Image (cartoon, rainbow, N blue to C red; front, side):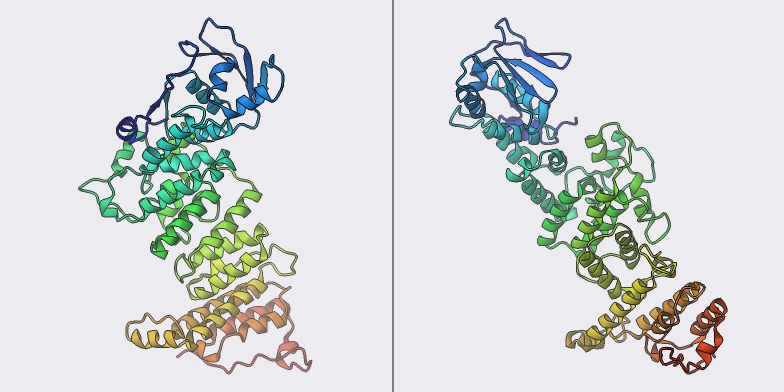
Length: 510
């Protein structure tokens, strides 16, 4: 485990970098590991066996009873003075944390790091190592290290938050998750010009960078810190902790486009296949999923494994990402929204979240491409592509356009930027782009013989005639549809009341 970047200064300054207890009652040279059993290196025979997981600790009652309220109750409430065996299978942090806590009881110096502090803090709470039993007990010491060392360090805060994944609900109840999330958020929102600490930074096009090479990503006078410097480091967090960090960052007022970019970066790493190389995202997005540098090396050691997550975990990630996307338009790309929507339908995400995502796509529908909107039908449907989904997206776009055009604030904004080409609402160019998209989509899906005439007509007639400067694309789609179904009389005459003729007046390109 790497050494805390601030431990050597702040830890020693406050006397908490290395912990020890002067009152231990048993002289020992340390602990010895034999197989899966720990023994105290002393001439005094052990009188207490503590089982934690599959590890046995052969200890002495007095050092533990003098510092642990829980061990006191185990011994004295058992009404068995000869009790010599205790099982602590639910101790947070497992054998590793108990080993450190036991060593502290014996007065053995401990080297606290960002990797072991959260488990030790939770174990101290579980063992009730409070000040009433001994001044400077383990709860006090670990809290001091968290406050003065961990929370002042960017990397320590992330590593500790990552280690909290296996400590629920203890880490939550002790506010370790909240405090680390707040610390990370404050530092992420700091002015990049004032950043002095090291960070992993933007992935480079190297498959397996060495730890020494990461110095290039640290702040320097010659290389300015980019606004997205924090993306890669926070992307190692589990989704619930990532959501906590992003929520805290939102509260502190970070620009929505940076938050959206971070979300896309996280999705590229944890949702394999969502972002494809060269499609919809930049090279930085496509290569980030294979990046194993920085804190990944710290947390995962030498393992070079891509995160493997099951469908249930993927669904939870998709649902969480949908819920934290900033509400502002263009906070994330339309291509990303559509790919997320495709995955949401495939994983059967909660309907309310899918509807919310569809509305978000409608806000930016003019940015969509044909490849993005050709979403396969994952539910039981006669058509190859999800035509109903496309229809809903188109309806959301039209509702959004109508809402923006009727909003006084939007109207004033449009007037202000009329000659700058940046008006947001009632944008004829947006409708024209969507009209071309609809025509291209109809041409593609018209080859499906299972596409009903009603659905074809509804899509063809959804946009006002003013949205099309030329009907050539629509007529190509109609021609393709007629060739597919070979059912000319239904279109040409339309005597059946349920079958209306297409209402477009011919307009040809000049």
